[in-house]
Length: 234
Length: 234
DNA sequence: CCGTGTGAAGATGTTCACAGCC
DNA sequence: GGCTGTGAACATCTTCACACGG
Image (cartoon, rainbow over all chains, first blue to last red; front, side, top):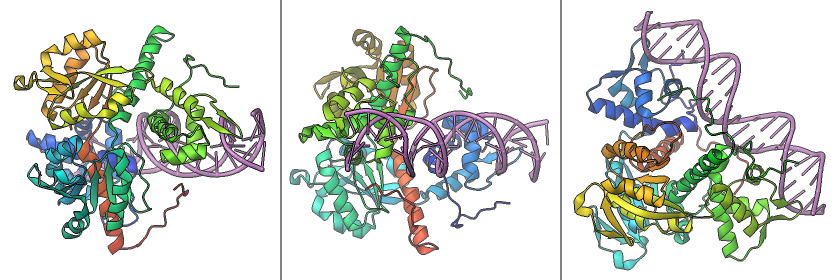
């Protein structure tokens, strides 16, 4: 049973699973690059850094793409996941804010190779206009609307200072962008139907600092080594 | 009662809460900057982009720092959260891999202002050695051990290509680093007791692409607008 | 026999709704 | 009266363990 078609509207993939699919995709690509044609859930789970039960459960939401007693065909599964995520063809994206981070993002080759194409770089500072970064000219922020319409852009990246982020987001939303990746350290408010994901460099460090502090306190105080009840996936 | 002291070893803060504390900290700083001395859970929740029940629950894991009928003292709560995270004084960090992203990270002022101090920039490429980035000289990767010992560094940032990331991580762990922030698109394996957090730019975009594709499919197929059962926190 | 796919159990996280205190 | 702090209900996510099919 459960031969769910990819167009079955009832099929819902849990958010936690969606967040791992790109990891599986990358792991499959790595396996394929080493010439491996078939893998078990155990193999792929190890490559992806998760345990095999979770991997199988995740894949089960997509359909039954494995063969019992055998495993998964690497290329076939890779295609199925790519199709599910929607990266079998390129998504055009615009990057707004060409400071240090914007430069790094524009030059990041991982976007290109993973289903995204940077169609424009925009900055409010007119002195940057015309500069070529990673083969793309920096253009004035005003041109956002024309670019978005011309290239049918649905995804925007914000790499501006925090003070500008909400204004940029408002403008993006007004023009029709419905997904935003925000690198600015600010909370964006957007209407329903617009997705925002946030990448915050210093928040990640602060989370590490919290655990680091706990390790230090634990060492000097009570329990020296907490015996973590761990499954044991390497 | 539950007058938990900050040194009470039994007190455990859920991981999901830990991940939000830095957001609250930032929101409190923003409120303080506009001269606000006191705020309700509703105010702070709005500034942080969460709902107030979640905020209160999160804060309750730290202790009882609010006043019923009144709210929270902004500066006092800010200090308590900073202390809990461990950013009341600076953590020295090293950044390995001074490509585009490493440059951007080295120049990112948010680290400095949020409890971190970049004490060294390292790169395996000898031609980069001596270059000054954000006031810090780039040094050969070999000097990692000396630097880590000299500055008592516990947190390392990896901004190398994926192919080098595991080697760098192994070296960091061998030298005594116990927390790693990994920007390379690769799965790191580290021994128990070492924390790794991953920031992956293209994974975030792929997650957005998935939802974007769903919106597009939903529009052309069945339900035009899914009536999301939402609490309604703006 | 082996490894996938999956119900069921358990753990973690979120929201509700109100008691308790200012 | 108003707002915090929190048990209890609900939702989501993870892990277990085994039936099932190649």
